[in-house]
Image 1 (cartoon, rainbow, N blue to C red):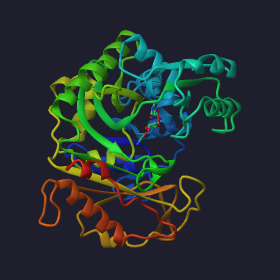
Image 2: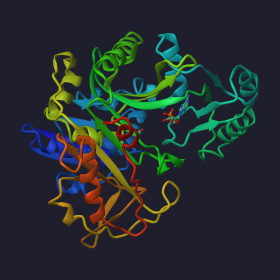
Image 3: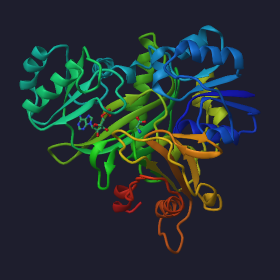
Image 4: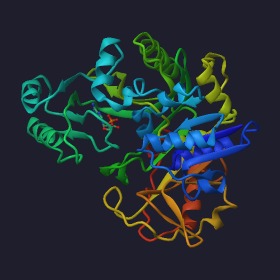
Amino acid sequence: MKVLVIGGGGREHAIVWALSKSARVTEIVCAPGNAGIAQSARCVAVNTGDLAAMLRVVESERPALTVVGPELPLSLGLVDELLRLGLRVFGPTQAAARLETSKSFAKDFMQRHAIPTAAYAVCRSLDDVRRQLPHFAASVVVKADGLAAGKGVVLCNSHAEAEQAATEIFSGALLGTAEKELVLEEFLDGEELSFFALCDGKHAVALAAAQDHKRIGQGDTGPNTGGMGAYTADGLMSAELEQWLLQNVAQPVVDQMAREGSPFQGILFCGMMMARQSDGSIRPMVLEFNARFGDPETEAILVRLESDIVDLFDAAIDGTADRLAIRMRPGASVCVIAASGGYPGKVVNGKPINGLDSVRDLEAVVFHAGTAAKDGAIVTAGGRVLAVTAVSSEPTPAATTPLQNALAKAYAALEKISFEGMQFRRDIGWRALRDGL
Ligand code: AMP
Ligand code: GLY
C-alpha cells in the first residue's frame, strides 16, 4: 500500500522509518519531508500551514493511508477534509484536536469530566486576570490559549510577574500575535511524564511512556525548546500507573469526547505532572494534552516498536484498538537532539553537516529534524537539526543498564557528527539514571 506522511521533522522521519519496515507498505510519500526522509520516501514540497496545498498533494498522490504528524495541519482541519473525501487518515479531526489547540477547551473539558488537573481560571482581559489572581498562590502559571510551539507558557513567582506575562500575551509581545484568551493555573511541583495512548474513537490503549527534556541547557536550565532529548525505559511507568492513567485519564477523554460529538482518533499525548502533595503523596495530574505524536519522544518510542506500525494506524481508524497487542522491544531507548547554534533563538541555516556516513556502523539511528540537501551535501535547516536515537535491550560490561547502553550508543554517534554551532545536551536521561534505570 501507498502511505502519505504529512510533516518534515524528526517525528515524521521516525514514522517513515517505521513504515519502511512494514511488509504491507510498498510506497512512502512525505510532504514536505527533509533530506533524511528523502533517503527512504519520495518527498513532495508543501507548506503544512496551507490546507488547500496539502489537499492538492493528497488528491494527486491518492494514498491508501495518510498519517498527519504535526499539530498545525490538524488545527486546520486536514483530517476532516480527508474524511469528507472518504479517505483513510490517521489523526484527530479539528474539533477533537481542540484538546491540544485550545488550552481553555482542554481545561474546561477536564473540569467537566473530573479528569485530574491543576486548578485554573480562563481570562479574557487583564481585568479578569486581576480579579482571578487573588485566588492563586504566588507561584502561578500563565498560558496563552492557542498553539504556541512551547513558547506560550510562563512560570511566574509572583502575581506581579503573572500580570506582566498576561499583558504580553494579550498585547502580542510574547507570541507575535495578540491572544484573546489565557489560562491562569496553579503551579504544580513534581516530575513530568509523557504518556502516549493510541485511540480509535472508542478505546484508548497504552503505547508508551517517555520523559523529554524541554530546556536548552544541562541540568534542565535555560529557555524552553521544542525538546532537546527524550527517553523511554522499562520501569519508567509501572504497570499500576499505566492502568491508572488509562482508567482516569485516557479512557475518560475518549469516552467523553465521543459523548460530546468529537470522537478522538489518533495519538493522545498526556503531559502529566506527578504532583507532590503537601502530605508527601504523589498525585498524577494532566498539564496538557497533545493530539499527536510528541517530538522527540516519538523517535525514542518507535525505535522500540516491534509491531507493524500500519496495524496500529489501521486499528485506530477501524475502531479495533482494543484487539491490538502492541509489541515493544524490552529495554530502553534514547533520542538526543543536535541543535543549531543560537537555538531556541535565531539560527543560521545552511551549515554543512559532517560525519553522517561514519555513523552507519554504529548502533544508532540518525533521524533528521531540520536538514536540507544543497549541492550534493546535507546542510542544517532549522533549530533542531538531528535526532540521534539508540535502543538497547541489554546491559553490557561497560553499561550496567539498557538505558546506559542506549545513551552510550547515541553519544558515540554524536561524537562523529559535527556542524558549525552544533549544541546538544550531555545529560539526557539523568533522572532515570539517578533512579537506577
Ligand atoms: P504545557 O505546554 O502546558 O505542557 O507547558 C509547558 C511546560 O511548562 C510543561 O512541560 C511544564 O514543565 C511547565 N508547566 C506547565 N503547566 C505547569 C503547572 N501547572 N505547574 C508547573 N509547571 C507547569
Ligand atoms: N516534546 C513535546 C512535544 O512534542 O510537544
